[in-house]
Image 1 (cartoon, rainbow, N blue to C red):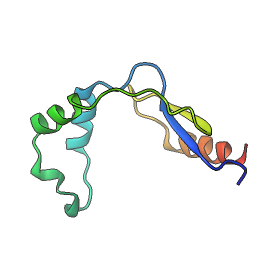
Image 2: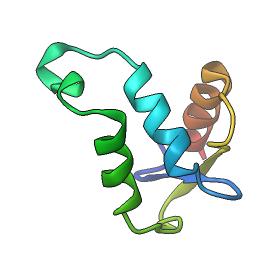
Image 3: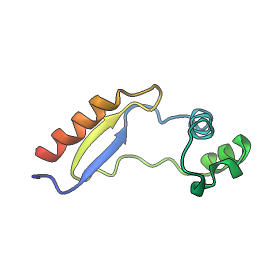
Image 4: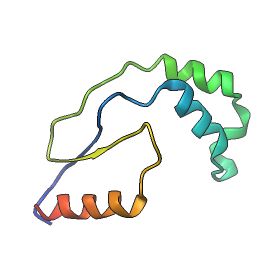
Length: 85
């Protein structure tokens, strides 16, 4: 592995809090995460409170467009390629 750090960055506009909240409440993780304890409104409120930061600008960067579904295979390929640079 040539690269010791990887910076995943959202390309373009960041995912809107409403989109992120909808995705969060739709996903199903292990019950230990307590996701079902939070309503859409609670998740949305927490997401709106998070400041929007830019890319970290460390190591190799893999860009992901959060406004649409990503092809996981392509993202994984790009991550593997970044670690080989």
